[in-house]
Length: 493
Image (cartoon, rainbow, N blue to C red; front, side, top):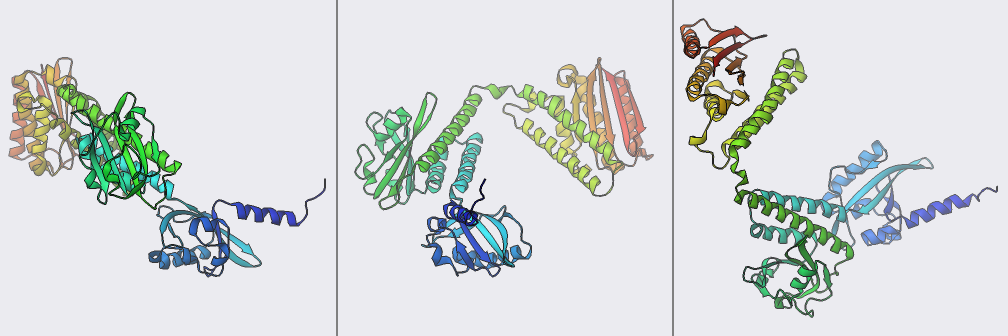
């Protein structure tokens, strides 16, 4: 087998260099361009030979050039192949002054004892636009799920659509209650003139696109038929009609337009617009489904929701918190601090769930059960204690506990919290209410300095014990390891 001519590898490398879709730019340690591939013409508007000898900052936006020089120095101080500016939004500068997003890969090269850097640059505008599209859809979805109506969010949709599609005007057409279509939102210079215009559902281009569920490109809106008359006044040329449709539902049409003299919409623009419209349609349907659920009263099962939250989510979080506290006793240093932070985070989550339960529609003072009463009582002691006590429930505490026992239990809980606030100097207090085998058990736990011998604390504990005795139960107070107190109050139900 004959060997390849020595010049062949060099020719092959040259062909690859010339054919690379990325703009390849080679600079020396001073940041001077010594070589550029033909792709720089497409990306930056310069011919390769024009760039040779120029500083690399020639291709960098004016306000970033000083920073870029430092980046070049830093790279040559410790050269290694890597992505440039990870986490940053890099930009290039076109010959006409236009700035655009870029992605850059760097690799060091050494030849004849000198170091160089090869930069592989590509246009990142589309990938950045995809990220922006996701953010825009997320923004719309969040507003819809927070209770905003579709009509309220359409101005945001039109604004984001115009910016992301590089259009000069965008308007949204929707079916009206009276039958014809109506332009309900418009964005762009002078586009307000389109607002409120009525269009035929049968003969307008918006109607045709909505019913066909197929996008349509328009070469010139000023001469096209069945488009809003004001398109001529706005000097609009290239247009793109995209349906807002899902399954059997036709929600309307979104129209993208550019003024005369600007580029027509490409197939990439069409794909972007269709994905954006589809995502917005899904968000609208999600918001409408939420509103329908509320209107049908499905969320009226407030008591069941509250019970499930307490018996599952809060109970599990409470168990995790107890486990972390047990682990914390034997951990010091930064690991201990991280555990403390985790415990505090769990407290915050439990508090948020409590607040959510309190805000459930239809829950009034008349419907509050033992759970809510205890949680509200715990919140009332926040200032005295310096923290909110944790409260957990096991078993059917609302359904199984008689009212007379509820009254005693709340007084015992209040007395116990008062004792902790006045005497324990605790940083954590936890109450566990359990209904099991026809007994109600309250365990009140703190990490304070232990049972006080003072008369006030003794009176409080005697009151707790007396209430248990009146109900045929008993009360027990014991130290908690490594510090603190456990009060157990047990009565039959």
